[in-house]
Amino acid sequence: MSHPLEELRDNALREIESAHDEKALDNIRVRYLGRSGSISAWGEQMKTLGKDEKPIVGKLLNEVRNALTAAIEERAQKFRVQKESDTLATIDISLPGTPNEIGSLHPLHQMHERGIQIFRRMGFALAEGPDVETEWYCFDALNTPPDHPARNEQDTFYLSDGRLLRTHTSTVQIRAMECAPPPLRVIASGAAYRRDEVDATHSAQFHQIEGLYVDENVSVADLKGELEFFLRELFGFETEVQFRPHYFPFTEPSLEVYVRSKALKRGEHWIEVAGCGMVHPAVFEAVNKARGDKAYDPDKWSGYAFGLGMDRLAMILFDIPDIRLFAQNDLRFLKQFA
Ligand code: DAH
Image 1 (cartoon, helix red, strand yellow):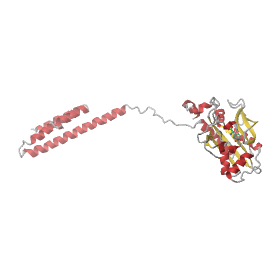
Image 2 (cartoon, helix red, strand yellow):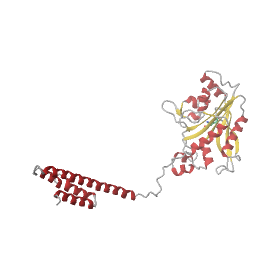
Image 3 (tube, helix red, strand yellow):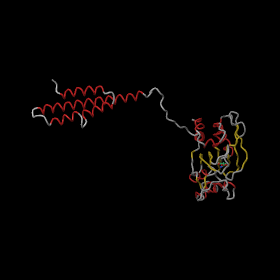
């Protein structure tokens, strides 16, 4: 005949085996192994047993307790595994994943890179200067008199300390010449700022590619030939380039550059893309004054300079109708240049 504890064990094991969920299993655990459960009751009962019986029943009680504990744990583990695979079954691994959004270069940045690449091949080095400038670099050194309209507060953003947001990238010409003696062949590309009425072709922040070449015997022919080469590299060989007389304080003579091309959607009519000219001797003298030497002797050196409107170039190249699109961060627009 089997001991009642063995019977209890067999019943419990059957119940554990047929428990259909975690909750049912936990009820069984409490009923047998809980503080007022059957196994604990047997523990109490042990105290009443005689000397001979005690170790035998004690050993059996331990075995039963261990057997039940192990069986409950095993069953619980089964439930956990089942739960996990049920969850996994709800995931359709054949669905396409969520792709990472990969950004792309802004069209103005692409324009900058294309421009730089062409000028590099022509032997220009890259120079740079800050957006916040002093009047010296923006106007005085560029032979722009104090009463020149460009210096008007209506046209330029001044900071309270007298500095200003550069109105053109020509500032970098002066910085480059202050740093290095001639011959010099540099370009600079970046933002410029003016208090312009904002519309489809005007923005308070725009971008320029500035160029400066100083050497012996540099002539207008060099200027025209090299700008023409650049514009044809950029827009295609059919591009026509026209130079029209103009006035800038820092060049003499001064010219404006226009392009036209049947191959371009936005190039049917002449479009102004740059200002340029031969560096004014007064600019060389201002640089000499700042350097404290006579490195840029206007009798020995001559140079040409130009400032290309980068937004304009990009609008022609990529057929963009409105300059404001560059600054609106509209992904529908930006994604077209990815
Ligand atoms: N700085 C002029 C502007 O923003 C453009 C320009 C004209 C730049 C003549 C030059 C230059 O370097 O020589 O309108």
